[in-house]
Image 1 (cartoon, rainbow, N blue to C red):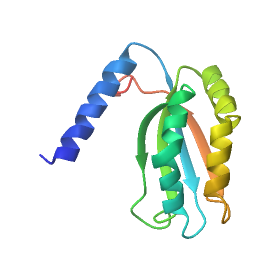
Image 2: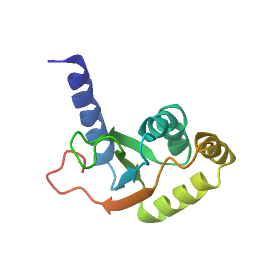
Image 3: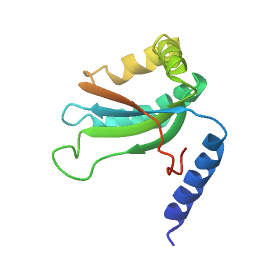
Image 4: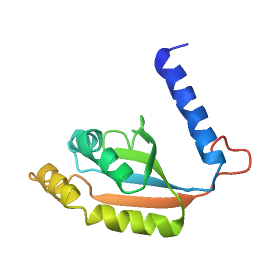
Length: 132
């Protein structure tokens, strides 16, 4: 098997083990970017956002970019986990008020916004999900 695929499977197995002990809520977020800004958004996540999420109690689960139109080239989809819906609100409030986040966001948007639309859906895993 391909090494990245094996690593991904091991990552999901580890996540399933970690989450089996509790009942976290998962948040699926979809970001739409202006034309030509997806790489700027990816750079911001890669270099800053993911670390800031962890600092504020959010667990990074996975990040994806659609392959097909109409979403390809300007869409980022990711899943994070929170201890509860109440914790999610607290996590987001703290994240949005973090001085480092404000600085990172401002710097990445020096040439205009990198996100034009944010969609968020909170989900619970099914009883047959590996991430229950």
